Amino acid sequence: MLGAKKVEAQEEAAKALVSGQFVLSLQLPAGASQPGHSLQVTGYLYYGEDEAGINARLDLINAIIERQRARYEVVELEGRLETMNKHLDDARRTIADMEERARKDKLSSQERLNLRNITSNLPKFVEEIEKSTKAIYDARVRGGLISNGAARAA
Image 1: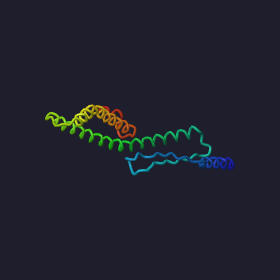
Image 2: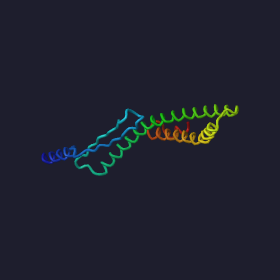
Image 3: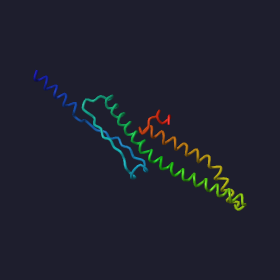
C-alpha cells in the first residue's frame, strides 16, 4: 500500500516536471508604442503532456496575442486615419481656393491641371478613408474593444 502511494506521488511529480518551453512573440506596430517593442509569452511543456493539450494551450496563447496585436493596431490605424482626414480637409480647401481663382480667371495652365488632378483623385481618397474606418472597426472587434453586434447597432 505504501509503495503504491509512493509510485503515485512520483508519477504526479513527473507530471509537474518541465521538459521544455516555447516562446511566442509579437512585434508591436510602430505607432502603438516605442519602436522595437514586442510582446512575448513563454509557455512550458510538461513531462507526459499529450499533443492535444499542448496544441490547445498554443491556440489559446495565439488568440491572446492576436487580440493584443489588434488592440495596438487600432492606435496605429487611428493615427493614420487622422492624418488622412487632415489631408482630405487640405485638399478640399485647395480645391475651393483654386475654383474661386478659376472663376476670376487667375489660374495658370499648370494650376488648372493640378485642380483637375486633385478633383479627380478626391473620390479615391475618400474611399481609402472609408476602408481605413472599416479596418479600425474590424481591429476593435478582434481586440475585444467592442462587440460585433453592439457596434453594428450603433
